[in-house]
Amino acid sequence: MSVGIKTKHFISNIRRSFWLLTFTSLCVITALEYEARDRQQTAAVHTCLAKASSLPVNHSNHPCQSVLTHRKNWWSWLTNTNKSPHHHFLEFVELIHYSFD
Image (cartoon, rainbow, N blue to C red; front, side, top):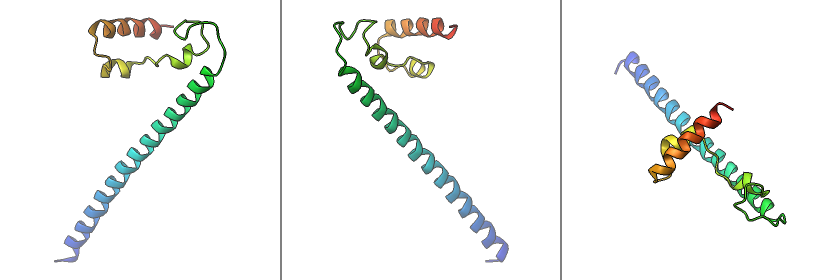
């Protein structure tokens, strides 16, 4: 093999390794981010449930309501995690409503 072909092959391997390392790093960082977010959410729920309140948990003025309510965003709507089409439509209306606030 000539030096030019070896060099091209070497650069190709370096490039492939770089992209593989970049992709793996991105996956690991994303997984760690979600794990940290999940831990924070769990800690917030445990802290909230320790507070005494005479209101039921599903009441809108309960101190845990903001913690227990799932975040509604466009990504969760697009991925349609809920199987009910009726609920999917209501989430759509709610997202449009809150987008203009």
